[in-house]
Length: 174
Image 1 (tube, rainbow, N blue to C red):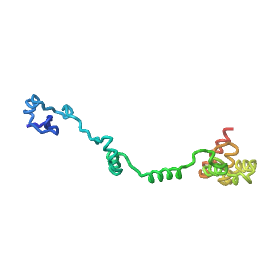
Image 2: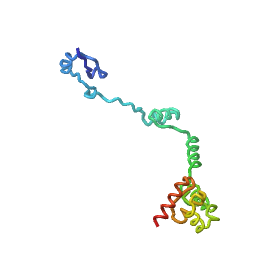
Image 3: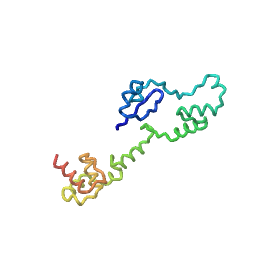
Image 4: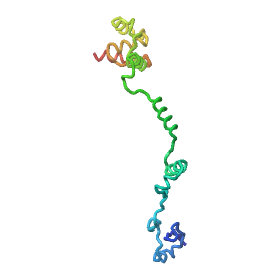
């Protein structure tokens, strides 16, 4: 025999009934879903008037506010959170960096060739040496040559074969 949940205003949580009883119960006001019952909604909001709030102790008010789902901090805790946020703030404006810091970061990321790598390289001599034997150059010389002549954006963390191929491709494209 099949069973069915049925709900009534007097039994809002419902009961399991036999399917054969369902038709008779529907005539008596039973429904198949609790949403169809016209029950008053439960009001969980605290009932306090202005006088009760004025007479309440601070601890009681804090408890009341916490039951509503809010976080309550003391004034000292609040001030410490503000100070903590101010001290941990990271400057996000470009003006807060010095030129030396920006240049050092660009060199570290390989966006700009360092002055140390630029010094001491004769571009014509490197070009001639590369045409004669590309493997004879160091990685730093490959990077300098490719970036100085062709603005290839080469970096020293690239493989030497990759550097040579990119420079050769740029030479052939001329």
